[in-house]
Image 1: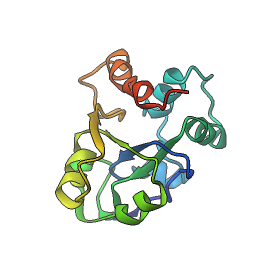
Image 2 (image 1 turned 135 degrees about the vertical axis):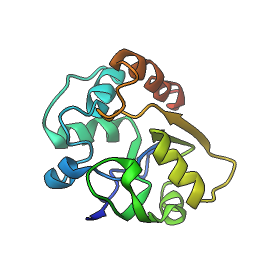
Image 3 (image 1 turned 30 degrees about the vertical axis):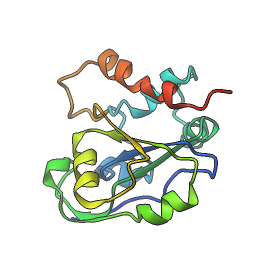
Image 4 (image 1 turned 135 degrees about the horizontal axis):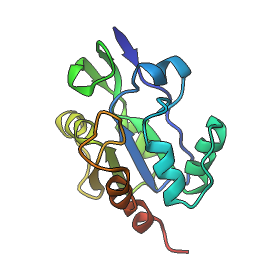
Length: 164
């Protein structure tokens, strides 16, 4: 099955970029990043930024934007049966050269899981000026870590925020 990623959620003020690999089937059906109810991405984001959890997608996006977080996927296109990253074939990456030029304040790139980091590092060459951090996948397929363990690692976002 052909899969195409979504447009990024971003603003010119973004200082951190979070990258997944490619939206899964449920996310593609809903037209929403991390749309699968069992994916902990939005719960982690809300908890880290001390926001009330919401099911309203526009409110979730606003939490990212007001905290200067951009969200995108490493891949623009791929062939995949199902939602597992391990099933991805014929991948094409998004245009990070253009994106990073348009978002000059981004200094840190966080990967939502090992596969996102692997596809990025395999296909994208960027300056050593960027801090690259691989975090545990928020996917329900990553059952080897508890929610609390994932949350603890994801709190690194707070350390990457500009000090006001």
